[in-house]
Length: 133
Image (cartoon, rainbow, N blue to C red; front, side, top):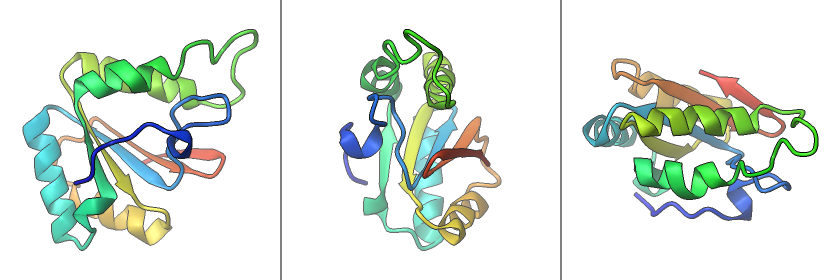
C-alpha cells in the first residue's frame, strides 16, 4: 500500500477532503482494514492503489480539512458531513481504507471483495457526487 498524502488531489477547491475517483471504506479496527486490503488485492486491484488511514490520520489532517467549510454559509455539498462521519467512526477506533477506483466496474469489484466484512461506511467519490455504497 502507498502512504496516504493529503494534497490538492484529495481535496475540494475549498480544501475539504474529497478524493475524486476513490472509494473510502471505514472498518472497525486495523485487522479488518488490512483484511479488506488483502481481499481487494486478491480481487485484482493493485496494492499501490490503496492507502490505509489510521484513526489518527482521519482525526488529524483529514478532519481538519472541514475547518470553516460551512462559514459563512453551509456548503452546498455533503463533503464536510462525510468527513464528520469519518471522524466519528475514527474516534471509535475505526480505520479507513482509501482505494483508487475511478470507474464503476472498479468500485463494484472492490465492494464485492469486501461484502462479507463489517464495513461501517463505504463512499465512492465521483466528480461532484458522493455515492453511498
